[in-house]
Length: 236
Length: 174
Image 1 (cartoon, rainbow over the protein chains, first blue to last red):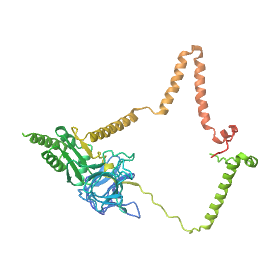
Image 2 (image 1 turned 90 degrees about the vertical axis):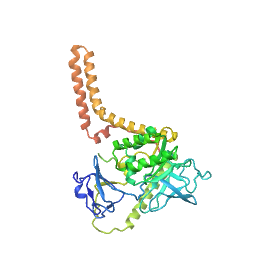
Image 3 (image 1 turned 45 degrees about the vertical axis):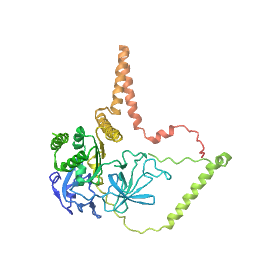
Image 4 (image 1 turned 120 degrees about the vertical axis):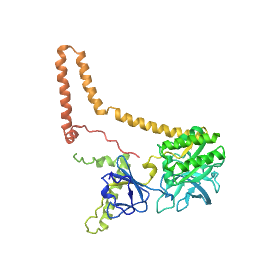
């Protein structure tokens, strides 16, 4: 197994022989053969990755978002339908967001959400057979950073999903390094949408560019790029 | 373990007025059991060999956020959004606490070890405070205590049950 880590695996390839026992698999698209415990991948072609102690997953370049339970995403309200909002999250289907799933919302006290608003929300239900459902509260009924964002400006951009995974990983220094010189706010959705808010338009564009070019950069490159960017923003 | 039959109340006791509720409950349980039996008899079963359920050796985790331990997706720097900065602080603190807990678990002494250590320690100190002539006695009693502990573990539970006294059974009230 160790030799195949980091190599390309193809759809339909059987990986069971490669794996030891007690492995954990991750993939949004692992299909399981019904007759036995054979693993193959339906759609993804990319690198097989491994993490201690026994976790294997396939990492691929991907733009299509597939909803997963517990993912935090950025959605756009498209319509109000009775007691739910329909939210576009970039998936194959619109997700529903009940109006009661906001902090301090009651039947009488509807949340202030309009069509076209950007919401940062979490998937409560996401499987292939049912309509995905979103919420804007955590288990204790608090908003905890979820809810309508971007009422007072900001910019939304779309990036590949594996870039999102990169900037959110604890090792990535991009946001921290940018935060040393800039006053800015950013919300990152697992569906590849990133919302940025800065004071000036110049800064906003700079941050957006920094995020999109950081895809193939190492941490050192990112630090170098950020310092150059900070210099050019000041006017050197 | 021996199977101890469930102790039941006598008929005379159940006839008493204050025991009526318990009596009714017992009757209800009995009738339910009978009903269940009737239902089980009515169902027919195909005489087929049992289908084998293959046990999966894998755990499938669908969320990449779990696997890669991704951070929460909202960030704010230099006071752009104080609320989000508060959240970020809480998240980072949680992580530090977790790391500290794992470190603690690695370094700490477990309960069994602690108990053993204290047992021998109390013995040593008792020896120190006793007069020299009594040292031998203390050693003996310590050994005896250890032996008796071993023996107690060997006694099967069924024998222990016999020695236990009869207790007052409180009637159930709802």
